[in-house]
Length: 151
Image (cartoon, rainbow, N blue to C red; front, side, top):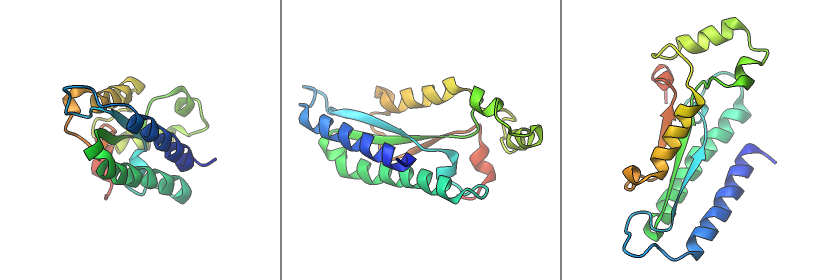
């Protein structure tokens, strides 16, 4: 199953479950729930040659926006987080050359990779009460890397 299909079906069944539950009494803000999808910096810009990868990430960003608009009036917020280059064991232990890793860092104004915990903090913000009026956005957590790419 493709990446987009996995996100699509997960969100579909989350929405079905949220619509069945009663809104929290006395709560006007996202009274039924909040969904945060994960796309990528590649969902906001076209980088490199991996068209299928980039297309699937763009699709997640678009689906997030469409469903946010459709379900906001029913008390469901839908957003997505778009990580940039994240310092994970998979990335650091892969066969990526040091030249590639250095280039990736150089395309980030912060001159570093994003820590996994920073992605989690973005997700928690979008789920939390501090973002109760936020729906349909894509939050880049990329150390500023998007500033180097045309959107």
